Image 1: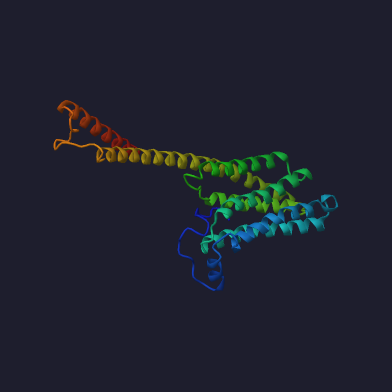
Image 2: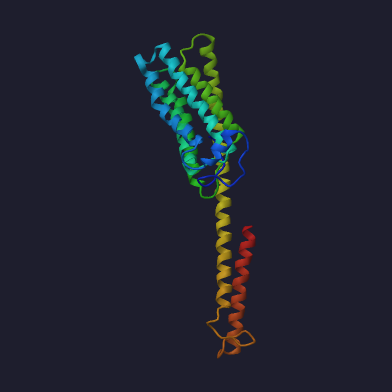
Length: 273
């Protein structure tokens, strides 16, 4: 469900796609137990099953590795469907936003680590991919209160390349296909690094904009509070605007100070924009 738009549990309020029975059922399930979240849970449950199948009989039996590949393929396919269903039928939930990336990283991480343990995949490839995925996941949580980093086309292509390459390594391939899978994995590694750097750039920009917006909001609140204090009925004022009993000079100084403070707060807000 990579790249699903941010929303509160139960959907963002966007109009659902009207269609057949699936559309009606999905819209009615706009809570935790909807089809998109169930597919995410299935993907999580497939992770230990995939590992057990891959390591069965020492991890080198072609038949059991084919079974492991089937479990891996199902997990990757559910990743495509749960994201599509969540976006199309307005089923994005807080649980899905957290569980979906965890499920994605869990199945891919299990495949890469298992293949490296079996000696089929160099550890440096596993290290690069896992470091990138963990770093981006932490970065998403770092900026989540400001905005959600959307999935890019490069990120989706990276996921496809990683899944294809890892699936080819799970199968007991020999000859030209074994050579081909190495180059597919190299493409996946390059895309992993490039898209990771792009996510870092996006996160920095989103956080900077979010902090700027918070400063603008704080300045506006301060200006409004100052104006509210000036208009408070607790202090009697003369028609000239000075407090009753205060001298003209004191009233003038207070008026100039209040006006200057309000103007500075507004200038700061405009500068942040």
